[in-house]
Amino acid sequence: MTVSTFLDLALIALITVTFWSAPALARPTLPFGVRVPGRRAAEPAIVRARHRYTRGVALLGALTYAVVGAVSLGFGRELPPALVLPILAACCCGLGYQAHRAVAAAKRDGDWYAGTRQAVATDTSLRTDPVRPQWILLAPAVALLVLTAGIGVWRYGALPPTLPTPNDLVVDAGRRGTTTFAAAFATVIAQLVLVLLIGLLAVALPRARPELDAARPAGSAAQYRAYLGGVLRLLFVSACGVTASLLVISLQVWEILPATVAVTVVGYLPLAAATVAWAVFAVRAGDAGHRLPAGETDDESPRVQRDDDRHWYAAGMIYLNRRDPAVLVHRRAGAVWTLNLGHPVSWAVLAAIALVAALAGFGVIELPTRG
Amino acid sequence: MLLTLDLDSEVPIYQQIRDRIVEAIADGALTEGDTLPSTRQLGTDLGINFHTVNKAYDLLRAQGLLRINRKSGAVIRRDARSGPAEPGYADEWQERLRTLLAEAVALGLDADEASGRCGAVLAAFGAKANATS
Image 1 (cartoon, each protein chain N blue to C red):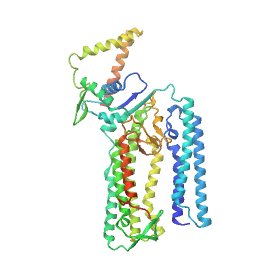
Image 2: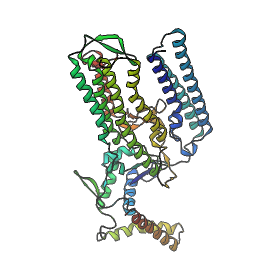
Image 3: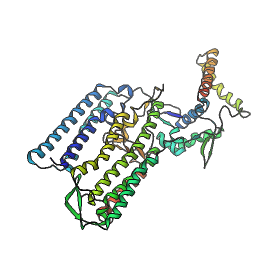
């Protein structure tokens, strides 16, 4: 087995565990992206859908693991991860969508919102005393970026006519490409884009609509505040981990460090540490921080959070509400924010991204490429 | 302050916002000099049109509870400790109270219970204000 196969197997395990654990981390009032009143959270239809989904994902993951392992050991060949991983993720998404439809049908048939009073809640202190990003935590990532760029500039004049290029997940010394400025500084550009994106996210996320539950406004506000602070800290720490990994990859591309298994493994350690930190946080906090301590609050309200299912598509992954002034909203599943596709600003953002992609596709601007 | 809007209520949204802010001032959750989010920000956070929030803020401004300016935004102008009410306010308030008490009497609430409940609500405001100060 090659290093690449080990990394593929690790990614298969990661994807399987991520999908498998998703229902446990989801908010009890949002099983499979369907909004349900709190007193309906343990309905048999939801429990059944959850069991069926977790069994299916575990089976799919084990099957993929066995096939990739067997092909590598038995035939000495590698199944391309660019094919295997998306197929596995798509199948898991399919199982999730099936569970979503089952829960949505049970909710509709049972009229779960009958007799409830729907409400929305917010905490104005999240605006007047907002969660502030600790920018100092981004300093190590910026320092690593400057260090990598500095080494690159120092080394650029002495680079050979060809450079080793990334082959899937590892730098392959046997596969070489012509030394151009873009090829030599691809990893530095990737670091720069990452730091800028993380900075942009740290500005935008505290301005997004807080994810509060009108059934327990005080508790959910305290949890969301802690959750947002944790996400911002983790974003900065992750930026540091990824830039550190990119520094090691840069050193391999510039042939300062050899492209050996040991160096590759060491190079991926900061990235792995960031992934582990996110996993620990996801388990501890749950989606939108619903697992975090809510403090001593006695705010059990007779109301329930507004049922806004009709504005959510693809099992709670896509939000489209023309009457909602919010641009950035917390997605129903995962520690992820998404754009309100009913808002013109969202389309402007997507158009800008599409424009950059199109310009890169036509070669007008040069983006860092793999291999 | 925590702001919850009942979407199934017959009370208009702007009135609910106005009422919750007045209650927060009485509770001590908001005091003189505290700021409120901008109308756009509060509208976004509640998923409602900012004109609705604007209407609520206008009501509060007309009553002298809120001051709005371009630099500092919406600021609470007074609370229970900011001195006595303006002259004439008590009479105007009594007019509205009269309707509320008339409803209680018409629906069979006796005078002792009505005044007892008024006292309990006032005591709760005082207790919360002391707890938050």
